Length: 145
Image 1 (tube, helix red, strand yellow):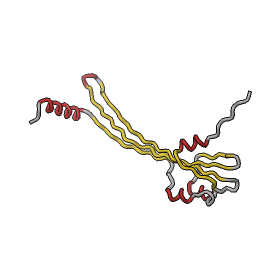
Image 2 (image 1 turned 180 degrees about the vertical axis):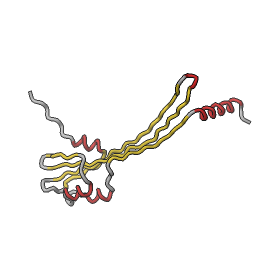
Image 3 (image 1 turned 45 degrees about the vertical axis):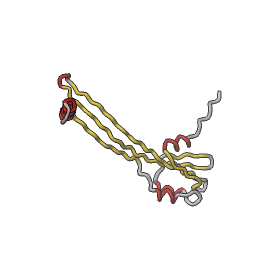
Image 4 (image 1 turned 120 degrees about the horizontal axis):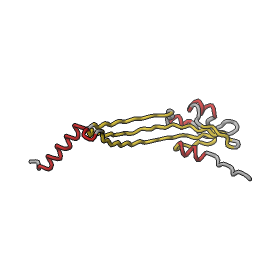
């Protein structure tokens, strides 16, 4: 047999669920299409040239001159997550009460390829896009008086 307090708690939860609105959503957004691992494995320093890399990856996001070398950075991002909203009508108070929770996962990944003067691939680096762009950004020269 159910205790009176348990039954009262169950009834309160049931009444709350019936008079409220709970919505959950999942969203996902992809920016740029990541290349397959097989495509990336084909792009090897000393074996690939600029045209091969452009044909395989398309247009880069960033192009930089690095002394005698040219650096190209490609990137892609996948964002997705769940959100849950709980809304409770408060008719006697003239409004609604609500609570929202969202969990989002971001995954910006990328690849940096460096080419020599002859347009031959000399280095490849993969990782988080923010790290690749930040690490590769040249330091500003101090201003002279």
